[in-house]
Length: 221
Image 1: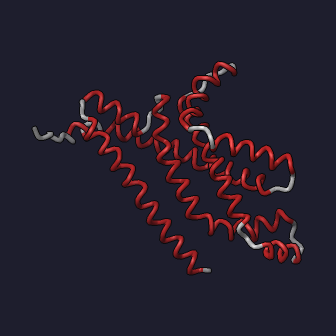
Image 2 (image 1 turned 180 degrees about the horizontal axis):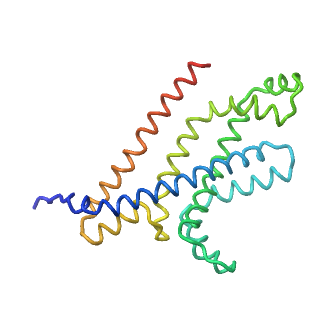
Image 3 (image 1 turned 90 degrees about the horizontal axis):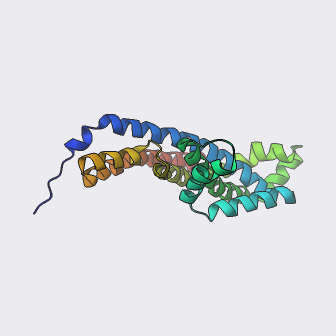
């Protein structure tokens, strides 16, 4: 017997989908800013010659890279309130888990990008009287970011997709709302198809825009 598709029952809940989309964009924006900012700090620390900074950053990166994001989110939501005298909201728990994990991966991207710049660039900057911090800010990082752009783009896409993990702690985002719609209307095929298409509609233009930016940066070089 042929399956009868019923997308009308999904689109009759556009208010729930809109609330989920706004929740997804909210956690994405938070985790993008926190994850990349933390990644930059970790990348600089991993490149540092100061042993304490290097070892601390390395321990952080290895721990969060080698433990599942979902476990981290659940730990922040269920375990942390048992250790500290306050509760953690679903948004805070999910943002912490995704941001710290993304920061660990982004840190390696920044470290590799900085290390890819030729030593002569440092020597030239120092010859002009720049300090190491000035050379990093004015000479090294601008060049490194161009080389890191494809990897950073992939990181941003992963952050957006990881927002679905927030549904594990009942944060209102697209997947969580999709689960609700599917349970009410008994239409998981249609519901999750729409959710997947929404994610594709958001991410595909972002990826294409990044390709255009990469080409322009290569032409400017």
